[in-house]
Length: 328
Ligand code: BDR
Ligand code: CA
Image (cartoon, rainbow, N blue to C red; front, side, top):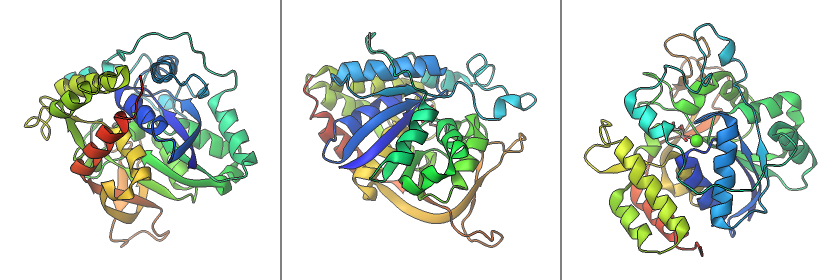
């Protein structure tokens, strides 16, 4: 199995991503999970993450609490994500989707003493085997670690990021939430020289799961599959009026697609090798993942893979098969 570190802002789709990774021990050796400010304050994303581990019966997976604030964006005039949480920035639909408190029972599990950034630097500097990173929240922890010691990049196998959008966006006309929260962090990561794949909204919105899929999960009779079913059902209500989702009674489970893409890369379709930079100007396009697909103006060549589409059938089959492995 490949050695991986998850970086999450749990978050209901993050929960499904964590469960997917931990129920795939042949593919992943999960060294630890870092948490970050994003869907909620880091205190809550950490607690939500620990609840998921408790649900799975995997208290041995270490959790490291990460950054409370984005690297720079909170300092920009008029730009105060998450103080308090996404103040005044949410539409009704977003509030419903992102505002949910995870309905997974409380836990006594605690995070480690070390903070996520220190642990990332230490682990990545001293590992014998290269490590794959799976960030599915704002990129703050990863970028901070790269800034503390850029040598960590030599030991990063690849970075599979849920984030960005080309046609489809959700936090402004042109930006996706994980990048919008901390645009500078994503730009640091894009300039790192690491192998990077973006699983953007264009892909995740095609890989939706439906309430019918949730029914199948409910038939498995485990608490874990029930929790994933509840997440799909709840998110489907949140997306009921979304322009591309309303026909289906369905919702994207964004973060889980990034995990599945490491198990079977063909779940991503039309993956383009492009040049991508993030708009960090704090204007209308703040947080946009700007793609130069034709390389007409960009001199520095492609720096990431960007998935334009996804295979919903394959994703659904993977999720249903993986959740069947849960024993509790
Ligand atoms: C991303 O934003 C978060 O709210 C989700 O967990 C996902 O990682 C989708 O834009
Ligand atoms: Ca997330």
